[in-house]
Length: 115
Ligand SMILES: [Zn+2]
Image (cartoon, rainbow, N blue to C red; front, side):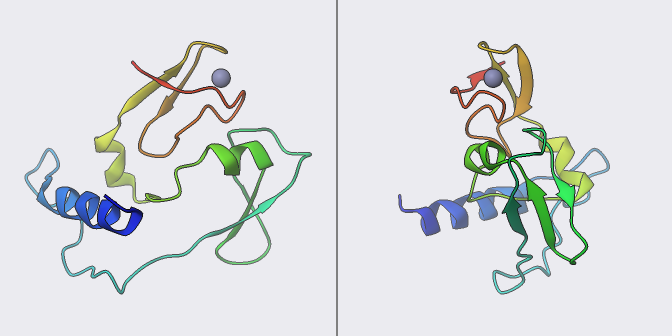
């Protein structure tokens, strides 16, 4: 499955999910043409694992490790996606993360484990 197929697969799964009040988590009027792009500017002086707003709309700053560890194919900000929490654990630095957003630990770049 290539990256685009994977995104479409994830999108179709997300459309089927509902939250605790049986409302769709994903606004189904949202089409593939409706995408929000967020740009991340690397800054080595920042704390890994966090995002810092910049003075420009849609642009955040983050430590280069944070950008490297972030999943590139799924990047949701809506609060409703907190319901889809997929707990991950870094056994190297004992920090908890979420597979929804991270493919590696942003602090030490080790592989994450299922919690
Ligand atoms: Zn770690």
